[in-house]
Image: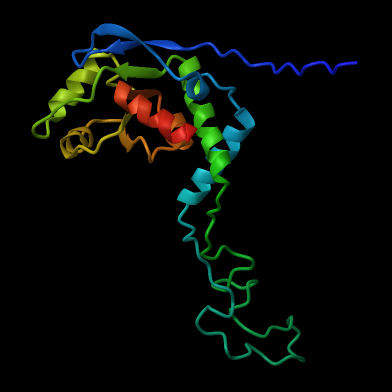
Length: 224
């Protein structure tokens, strides 16, 4: 009896379509986002874990206290062991005394840890998909072409798109010093390259802004 052929089920993902804005803030076109990157399943437990990791890595870990061995003084026994009627004591720097050392106090340490590259990539895809579900991803037709730093031009773009007061993550693919200098003075705006941003950058901002070319760079990074 011939064997039955295996039927592989292919998950049909809806291709998300978003509006494209010109540099003057007007809707000029529609654009299809990559469904593997922007329509993936949102893994909330993983997003929680990845945020905890990035926040732990940002901690300085400088808190420091002194044990009784580190506090200056206290080398002489305050009084003799017996015959005074008082409790025995060996040092005035005991943690039981005022100005004494600290018991089990914090010491400088490194709170940082890492997670596998694949895990961080899945978390980044989940964060982008979550932002798209909340309609917080905006596409512009191209990056601003500035011959010199002009903060006014970037502010004008954000005002025309009505996101000037929001926390905006602006992603770009090609290095442009004029854009970098123009964006760094804009309130609540974070500027990141398409190869450098992470899930915490995405989730800590309310709007994600990038061009069509940057979209292709993001997809290339996350699907390679």
